Length: 97
Length: 479
Image 1: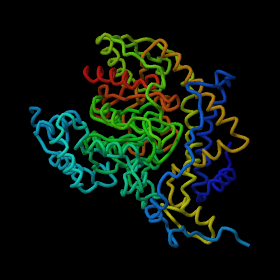
Image 2 (image 1 turned 90 degrees about the vertical axis):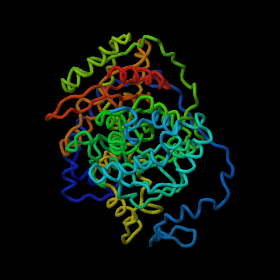
Image 3 (image 1 turned 90 degrees about the horizontal axis):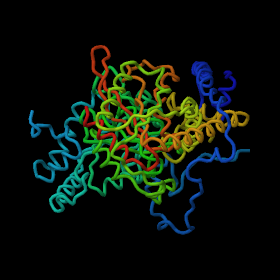
């Protein structure tokens, strides 16, 4: 079942940090939750037709084009930025040496 | 008390619309009645995260329209509604009850809000919820839990618990919520009102903060089935801003027979449901029979795996959807030494415990080595479940069971996550199959000397909401 190391790894992948106490708690809870959801393994995998149900799925694309006047939403969106330089979003340096 | 004495905030949409047209009250009086009650009761109930100041312009415009158009004015014109905090209203905060979006101000209207504005509806406030709609009690709100107006020691259900409490306590005429696994229907049942989860694709999600995109739908919480229908009709329809919305008539039209065949999966009710909830359920079925309808047995064996499938698919989609919240463009922006620190600090400070739990679960079930055992299996179980429901609907018109196994529980009673997840055992099937479902009050059960409401739940085939309104009306009349 789940180990503290595994849950720590998941947290790293999901970009959140867990305090030690929380790590222990989550690990215990994961055991119970995973034991429950593992009952899914009893489902017999249907094949072919049986796997498809309802309306067939398809991707919906729109025509390429100009959806709105350039800059129409710039100020509204930029007003939410935590830090901005003009109309640009300011972030830390992405590539480091 | 004569009908004329009913307080304005206690009216249904139907009755309020009638009085507005008959000049028995003004839009301003209706607004004031709701707003005053909201101001008075909200410190105790915490149904609203924010009560909006009166929009004088909108109130005047609604009044003018009713005066000019009379019966032709939309039924929602001048009606004060409560909106769940994960649905965007331009210029207002939309936080999804999370510290992550505490400071986020919506830059556009959700398509449903746009439609309501066009109909002349008014917005009383944004309602409390479980953070990012994850929970069944509102205890996971970052801003404190909502109390059930029927018994304030108990939860109102969730995640749309604030919307349910606002309607049940008459702090609004009706409300919008969102439903990913039962988040409209379960709080409706626990507060004694009506809640509808529409067919997947019936209502646009443009401007809804996404949780589980293959499951989420926006729907009404209302004081009557007729009101739920009015609100649903106002918000539904294909929307070019949400490519998952569907056109009318995509699924075969279901006629509404005089005698409804009500399918009951009795094999699901043998254990786990409180005995008095079952008694209330059987009594409601008996009344439906008296009204001339037929009750038939149906078998839905894959339902046994529905909750497990849901608690794999939903966290998988949650972990994906919430990856966009990184502290960069909007919302909480904690800063550390490096860009990676910025992401981690923002997400760690911004997300509450349940949100983090589900993100990690989703990350787990999608990780290589586990995706076949969990996610693909769950997806297969979902397909099997849907086929079973399609087959069952060859021999019945609606499928009925109790909305929840028990009435509202006390705060802190379900602190173990798995016990909270079991609240959704009946409601998740409609999200997995995409079918529409409604919860309607069906009598009360007694706990600690208090009469607590419970709901009866009906599922119909895709796009057969009308069948739900018909059967819901019958239950409502029989009470």
